[in-house]
Length: 639
View (spheres, rainbow, N blue to C red):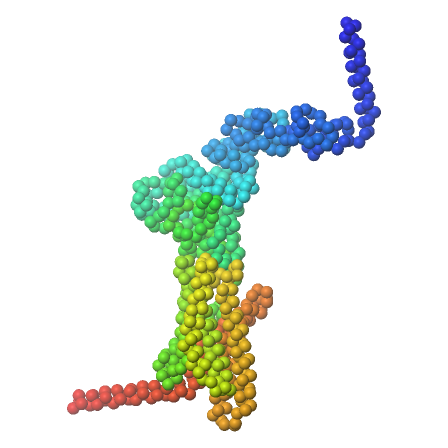
């Protein structure tokens, strides 16, 4: 006994010494511990629960030593049930599963759905508030168990990027559709699943059927639809409304905006299905009526969209669906396939009724004047020359451009037709400006010949430059623009160029250059005429001719430059009042362009007026001769 008593006494002495040292140094400062470690008795550091020293298992660590997370899922320390997904967390773990709807258990691998029934028992590594939530007292209508404590869609949105979220949603929509289809009977069924935040209705599909899910409805003629799609009658049809999915699967997944502004998802997401086969194409369209989730005071256009899954994730598409009618509360869509649908709303400023009336009336009058001018330039042979040819080409281009603008600018459906209209308008207005430029150049050369007796320049002008410049350059600009950005032709409100991403400069750029060049021509023309008038004798006829040319020069600047330049000031930066004034000035001066061209080049031209007199005289004589002949014929008959 004495042999082991001495070592025991020595060990006891060491322990007493250590204890005394700890008591003596209890007021010493705590050493610097790792972020995942706690100071113990101000003498050493201990890793927090769920962590262990980087050097290996053990409670104590040296100051400055790191603590690393323990992966309970890998080390088999987690106590999750067999069908639960174990997910390691920093300093802890959780067991994720879907209790109420077992077929949705795969979702628990993507998002965290924690529930007490996911665990075998409370793990010692978990602290209250970190892991298992308390059991709910209320059950769901479908399963009688507690609902998950998270919104599935929100959790899916947080756990990945937009591409991954879109892929997961596409898969989720198909599985929900499959589940509802298999769960429901052939008889009318209404139900909801709070776990997915959905409501649904199923019915027998053998006649014209109306389904209601939430505040949304679907009207489908099952008899013709099933026959046209090659499916047997007597099937089922279902409508599913996702009450919160639209908050996450929103307008950011709509990429084909084409100049739209203020785009918002304005309905809940719904799924219509005739089976578990994904998208079903219909012979007769189904009518889906959506209740709006938001209301606006501005003019709006509603777009009917369907969800298109893809390798890149998925997006909203307008293909196969179009709006039938819409008011402040509801929108009805006509769709030739069944999948998942929603309504997008794009806001735009309210149309100015007075401005619309001025545009329609002014363009109508301008079209009449341009037609009369073109007929005059063709039929009036005494005035045929280079200038008349220029006037004719300008009149034809403006006539076609204004006519297409008046009849097609608002034909936004179908999109292909709208894009074609926008492209043709782009070409016609560019061609009009090119002929305006040639008009200015020809007028400059004509006025210069008043000072220098050289008439061969204007003669060569027609042969060398007129048609290639007038029609070739606009065709080249439009061809390049269409090749670079074909999707920029046509917007959701008008069949014109997209105002976004600078594409409008394919029109504004050439127009600005032409206006600048015509302004230079105008200054040169005024300078030449000023010197010419000063050197003229006071001969009335010559003075009148020069004054008429001066008037034409001023009119050329006003029509070809000044009026169109007002369009550069129709931007938001100038303010609402100034922008509105500019819009009225721009519209009034431009819609009357045809009227001005007819007045200046036809009514104010002496040769044209003489031809008009000849035509009217001939028509009057012809009418008198016809009347006389009819009178003689009547007299002869009586005799």
